[in-house]
Length: 164
Image (cartoon, rainbow, N blue to C red; front, side, top):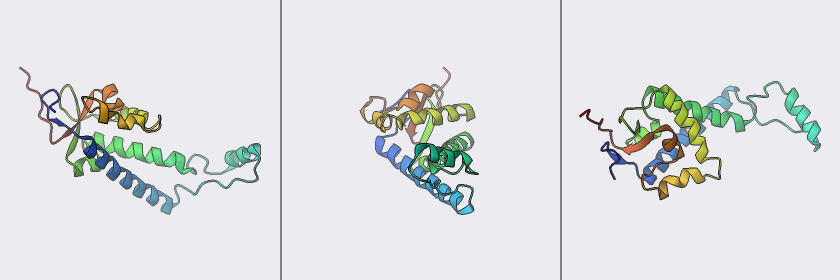
């Protein structure tokens, strides 16, 4: 299925495979952060009282970096933004021959659009992963992040549109 004569839109199985590879790489990065001590183990909760637990959380030395619930999405978002801004695609996308490009021009994403795409990508996670499954049922095989940022995920290198 061609999209604006740029190339074949990536099938869902390729998108899922690239996401799985990228997730494994981010988990490996996270494990490396844990081994260096930059991210500590989850905070110990004292007692069962909510106020006591909140006081423990607020008085802990590394309150912002302690929970993995904060570090994992942060590391994942930085990984995606930096690689797409610098290399044009993530390592998972590269391994499967995928290219995320600007739909209008077929050009790679710049740093601003890569950042916006990564932030909009969280829309697919929030409603019980429903947004991540949207490319299965849409005609264009695009998810919410692609709709909002004007991008498309192609299988194979993009063919920039001619300026005729």
